[in-house]
Length: 103
Image (cartoon, rainbow, N blue to C red):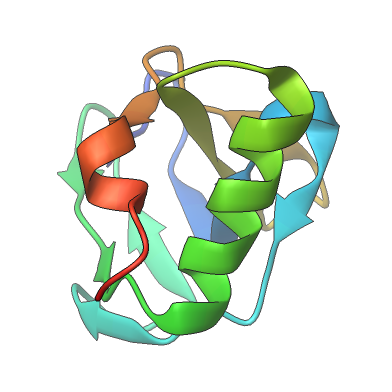
């Protein structure tokens, strides 16, 4: 979810994932949620979703190996109409089981 916590409406121009180390995973294919750009009024929130495709899974596995962790914390970052990127406070957590290669 992306929520407008400010005092003025804001437009979300796009969003992507920020992997450990600050690497951003762009070119996400939205499978759920409103089309961007999307206006959020004060206090309003919107939810977007993506499919865990092969490319994103490989990037998450690489981040997992590089960070030497079992679970990978990923933040959603949104590009606002004022040109600023904002990051969600709570990460999405991808577990080891979710990232295991398919047999």
